Length: 304
Picture 1 (cartoon, rainbow, N blue to C red):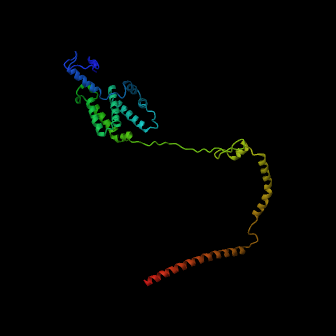
Picture 2 (cartoon, rainbow, N blue to C red):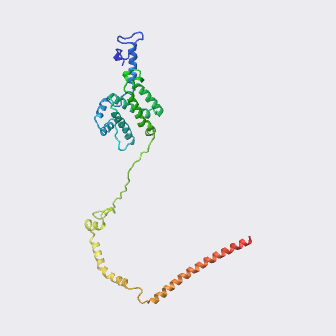
Picture 3 (cartoon, rainbow, N blue to C red):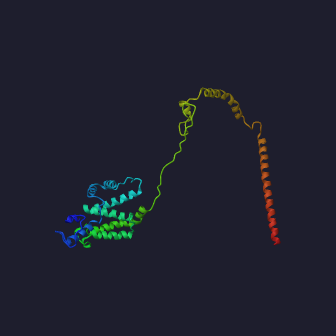
């Protein structure tokens, strides 16, 4: 800034000598202007970027900001998605306020600086509120500033900005602190598969796997059985009817042939009596044991 006032860079000017065209007041204004220029600089978005986004709809603004912020993992990175939503919401809110280009620039830079202070400087909520008050005193309504020419937002706009920051950032300040400071475990979602290798086979084709085709189709069309297996199967089919006849005749005969109904009743009665006698004997033994135990207890009580 000194070079624009006629003072070469790197050269100190004696106190008693004032260059032509300058005055102590102008030097003071220049110093204050330089100090003011450092407020909310550098700009978060350039004028060209803001102009591009103003011509886009909501989806277009989101895509443009994702490109400007270099967000490459929006589908998998929760942090990138939250930060993109933070900036997109702020820009769309400013679009509804009908800001000028310089107001867009300073407002978006203000949003970025608040996150920068939280992430890098670890500012608490109280410190962030104090910092916001100092910044709004510089760029806010004219009655709060030393020079009315530096006013960027009027009273209504400044109050609206503060109200928006209350519900967007400050209300969720703890969540943003958790986003930047807390370490999260990376959960890898995947599946493990075990593949069974096919054992070598003497045939032209390997044996089918369990999840493959059925063995009938495999043996009929892919690898037919050998001639020896075919001959053995034919012999089995020829001998099958002859051997099955005695089995069929044996199964057809009734096991109760030759017994009358009276014989069957007597056998069942004898079996039933044997079972009941055994059960009754067992019950009697248990009752006798319990009776002896009770008698022993009664004797002890009498003696006591």
